[in-house]
Length: 65
Image (cartoon, rainbow, N blue to C red; front, side, top):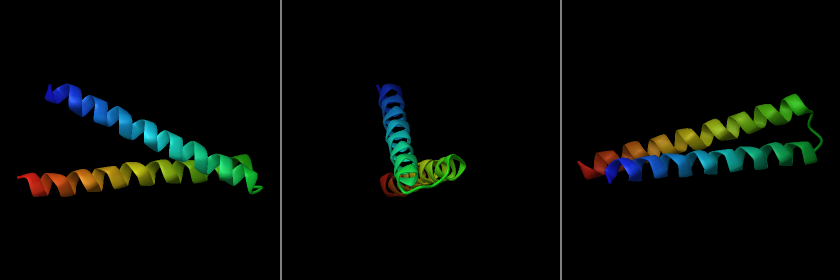
């Protein structure tokens, strides 16, 4: 049961990170950025979401133990 919960949470975080990255890339293109710049912004947002998820997980782990 715990493994299934961990896998579902991981997939949810990855989907949210991908959606945020796609949104950031699309907004960058609408703003007139070139494709490489838009891709760079999307990667930055994807990495930021994953970093935030890792920080929240570390904080909750410290509280639970």
